Amino acid sequence: MFFGRKANGRGPGGDDEDMDVDGNDPFGSFTSFNLNGFPRDRHVGLGGQQRRKQDPAVHHELRVSLEEVFHGCTKRMKISRKRMNPDGRTMRTEDKILTIEIKRGWKEGTKITFPREGDESANTIPADIVFVIKDKPHMHFRREGSDIVYPVKVSLRQVRWGFCLADLGGPCCTTGHTVPVKSLDTTTHSKVFLHCRIIVKTSKL
Image 1 (tube, rainbow, N blue to C red):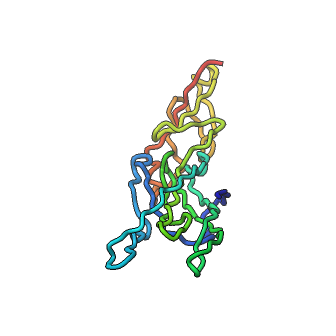
Image 2: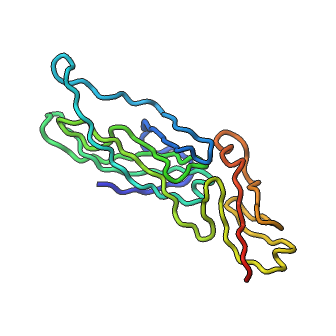
Image 3: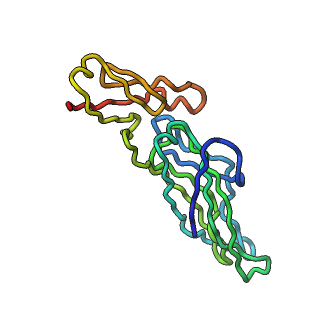
């Protein structure tokens, strides 16, 4: 029923969608917000006394790399869902592209909800489609809260005189164990990284 593909960058594409985002306080800066609110349950039956129940939300894992969440990116996810035909009895299968703008600093567990994009039926309201952000493993780094941890083995000479490493924003040099991230601007959503650090955890060779 579901498969996804991604496209990096911020160019337009796919259908514009109503989307709710539950940021779960990503990096201490984002809070929950709504883009183009969606109307709630519709009344059916005489006098509006009866309400159709909504199907349970359908959750999908959306895996992102540290580079993608560091710089921001666009994901385009293709879903297949059932839709009622005009005769009100038969069904058809329909594909749709859902576009997700991954903001810089979104934490693992952030939820992006597309209201009522699930299967249609005669007696229920379509389910919400929910994507949940999940970090991909990285070869060198891992996230710990608002910090990026980089375990590395160094010699005593490197500890004394300093050494260079490549962070997610490009190469930098350090003589200590905490590297402030300097390669970011401070406009709009980039502010979530003002307090981001790369913590270098060293051990002897």
